Length: 322
Image 1 (cartoon, rainbow, N blue to C red):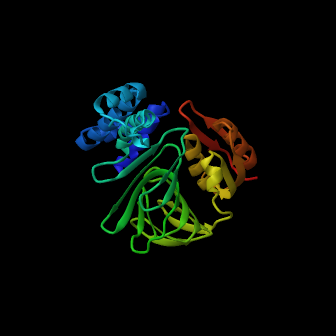
Image 2 (image 1 turned 180 degrees about the vertical axis):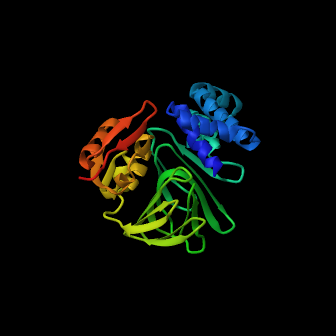
Image 3 (image 1 turned 120 degrees about the horizontal axis):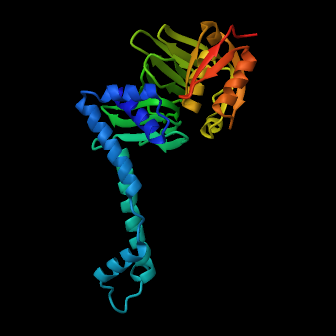
């Protein structure tokens, strides 16, 4: 699980949004750990190499290719025409460039590795046909092995899992293990020891940790905390289209859930001075609001006060809930 955390912290570092607390966490992961240091070095190499990748020179490539190809006389075909060969040369150069850029996503064991940085939302179709929308500041790894489809997630993603009864789809995240055969669901799990949220639109999902497991079906959600897993009715189906545009729709959700989702949207950390605030319910939609604007709206609705530090740490204070 340290690997996924390093991906997320590395992404924040390159975007310039790494907090002092997260910087210390990254340093701790790298100290006296050769494997983590090697991974961090490889990520830096990939980052720097991708920034230095030259643009393809199609004209030069065409001249080089034409010099090495003898076109038979008096034979005219699509494949021997200068324009075709020129564009073929451009295609060769383009695919070489794409191959170089895509190399970081695949390891030698055909493991897909995908990172969404701050401000990015990425969509990908996995090798089994599963569609994934990966939210910002999140990382995903995927491979098929020993009759299973195995994914590692740190952060937030929406999955439309391709049905295959012979190959269970298993997602390992910092706090949970999520197993499905074919379904649509939204999963948020960022940091070990914090809340994890599962919202199921369709199908059945087994949601578990080292202590317990629950079956969550379409129209239900589950919140995992250090004290256990709680299931509730899903007030409305998760809107993947809205979410993939960076918008956040909340419908009568507890503040404990709201803070998990706000952390994903704003890459901020949240605390409450009064645990009662976490039980308050909130409904609203955030589109282009800043962190302070969103926090102010919530604070007014729930009768709380707040403090925002320079490192994007938010503290809600007061009694809460009118």
